[in-house]
Image (cartoon, rainbow, N blue to C red; front, top):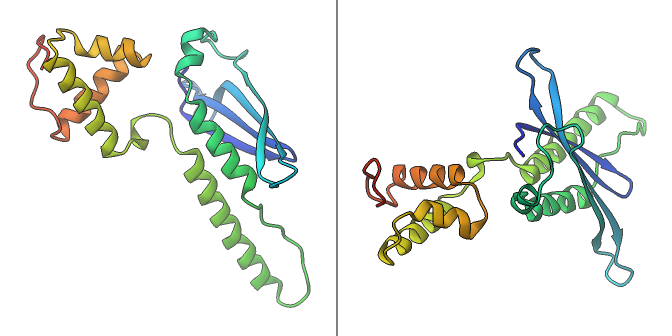
Length: 190
């Protein structure tokens, strides 16, 4: 399941993410790929939010929800994002007398901070959000397989990690470009 953008909406008891792709035909329009809804309640002793329900609706997607898609879906990332958004107080705007321009400016600054925090929590799908440490780990796994005599390390990593060969190939290519792996030779592992 691929998506290019995310809309986030906080509700009284949770967070809704709408994952979408941009339409090729209409600039500024998009097609919904899936909707992820995370519901929370509060732990009675600690008042810490706890996840009580999660639903993933991909009925408008062209990609069916298969076991493979569900296995590769970044559940942990989305649950962490939902908790951050759910626990971050949203700014309130109410006029309390005095200079309304100053209050409006403070409100806009507070909303900008809230928006930045939400964007940081949601991030962006794909390689743009990966840290160099990720590529060092990929390089180490790749090298270890080569050392063990594996002739198809990318396929092996894909099978072991439950990730597509295309994704693993991209990670290995990026690890090479960062200098964590030596330059490759076309058609030959290593």
